[in-house]
Amino acid sequence: MAGGVLCLAVAFRGEPIAATESIKGALSRAGAVITSAQRLGNQALVVSFELDARNAGALHAELRGVSQMLDESDAKLDRAALDLTPDTELSGTLHVTLVHNAADERVELPKVPG
View 1 (cartoon, rainbow, N blue to C red):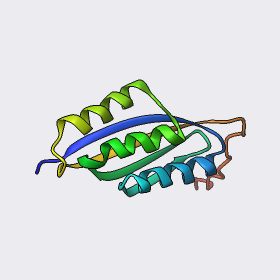
View 2 (view 1 turned 60 degrees about the vertical axis):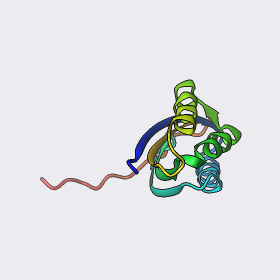
View 3 (view 1 turned 180 degrees about the vertical axis):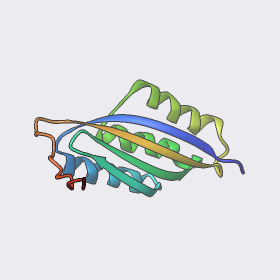
C-alpha cells in the first residue's frame, strides 16, 4: 500500500527536557516509531516518525493530551484517520515549538583555522 506523509506542528509549554520525554511518550503510546529527533536549542524539537494510518486517531489523542495542537495539524490527523486505509504506512515530521522562560542554550563553536 502506498504511504502518506504527515507534517504536524504543536506547541509545548514547559521545559525542553520535559517536552522531549512527553512527546516521545505520546508517539510511543500511539504506536509510532521514532526514526530521528533533533533538538534546536531550547526553542524547538523536530521528530520524524512512522505510523500506521489505523493509529492516526490515537496519535491525535496523545498529542492533544501533552501539547497544544495547531489547527492545521488537527485537520491533517483527522483526514489521515478518515481517508486512508488502515494498513497505509505514514511517515511524518512533528515540529514542536517550546514555550518556556529558560534562556536559550549556548553552544560553543570550534574556532575556524585561518
